[in-house]
Length: 349
Image 1 (tube, one colour):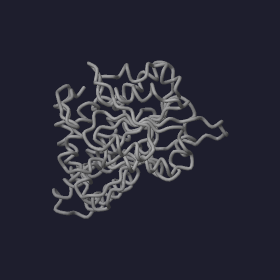
Image 2 (cartoon, one colour):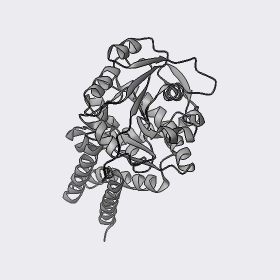
Image 3 (cartoon, one colour):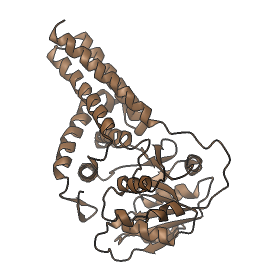
Image 4 (cartoon, helix red, strand yellow):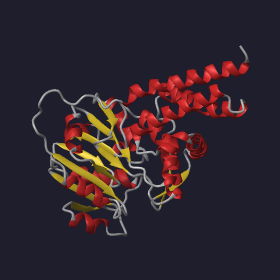
């Protein structure tokens, strides 16, 4: 058996290992028994979100299950965030000055939770929205403890295709027992039991650290993919915003993915890279072409689980994969240093 054949077999084995990641992406069962209705307070931290907020608030108005209240915490916005929120029926809280040691988002969530009256608290980022009947579906999956849904990425412009492997890695790194940063549903008493957002006040990816606090207090954490329930569009303002956003997120969260999942993901992506390299080295040999197409088909399948990525981004998957490797390396180098996000310089920790 020659070296090229051995490499082809190794590539196929690494490709097959990728299917083990699918087991992490189940939504989890809905509640199998009727539960008494519980009042839900929606808390939305918002800083200069006038372009995003209407979609979220309008989606909440259209839900079959209505929240008890919708609270928008205006984090020092200089646009029409507060005015639009009021016009669309939300209660607006003007954030108090940022205390030493707090991040803007954690401080806003903290203030919103203190003002909320519902038995359940649902924190949602301003650039998300609920799909039709999405809130009801989310509530049926909340049995107890803290529950989080990873929003489905509504990809639109060509440069947004570059988020493919970031979205996939973010999702498999969280589901089924972690918490996503874009949405958290938790009972008021469980939230108070861990001290709310105060213990994670200085964290960028507060969701990871909140999960640690919940589990440390004996409170179960669960998460699921959000297709058909909860969506967002990441970084719609251009490639620069996309690079800054993923740099911030991965500089802070690179070490938070479970080691087993991280190892499996790395192994899988190495296999994906070997396929096009084998095609080039073999001069376009048929076995390598077939292997490459198998990899592209697998990427297309996985991509549809996390976002509305186009077919061409899967067929040309080495482009977003190389982009992922380059930006991930840069993000890892920025870990513990200062990065810029939403007009503030923050420490990536």
